[in-house]
Each structure stands twice: as C-alpha cells, then as structure tokens.
Image (cartoon, rainbow, N blue to C red; front, side, top):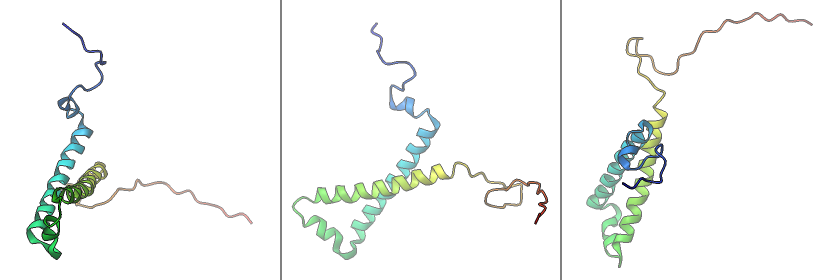
Amino acid sequence: MKRSSMPDHQPQSTRALLRIPLFRLLAINLAIGACAAALLVGGLLWLNPGHLRELIFADRAPSVALFLLLASFLITFGSAAMGSAIMAQGHKEDTDKGGSHGPRLAPQELTQRTHTH
C-alpha cells in the first residue's frame, strides 16, 4: 500500500471540508446566492427590460455577455448571502424574554464622582 505524503490534519476532499461547520455554512449560503443570481438573470432574460435579451443575443458571442452578467450577479448575491450568514451568527432569538431584539446590555454599578475645585 502506498501512503499519501499529505499530513492527516489537512482535508483531502470536498466531503471532508463540508464537515467543518463554518465552511458548510458558507457553502450553503453561497449556493443560495448562486440560485438567486441564476433566477435573477433568467428573469431578466425572460422579462427583457430595455431589450436586454435582444442586445445580448444580437452579439457575435452572446455567451461572453451571459457569462459576465451571471458572474457579476453570482459574486454579488453569493457574497451578500455569505456575509449576512456570518453577521447573523451572534444573533440568537430570545422567545422567552418577551421577544425584544438587539443586544442586551449588562448592568453596571456607577460610582459617584466628587468634584473638587
């Protein structure tokens, strides 16, 4: 048997990467953003605002324009979905505390200041 020269602590496949919770969270939200981007590009082509579909398909290489449009929407929506998932990590719902939203402030004791002139 031939042993791999890679150390055991490094992930060897995508399946091993998906076991890492943060990576899995980012991959799921990237997929959500990619689906939203594909739906939006498909909707733009279907609705044809400003004759966009006609402009794209009248070009010599419509695949370049479609790729650039889809890639820009993928970057935008994928990063927005991933960023909102990361920022929502510290947020926990307090359903038993009256449903208040926002961070809770810890009470602190105030010391009385004396003014000396």
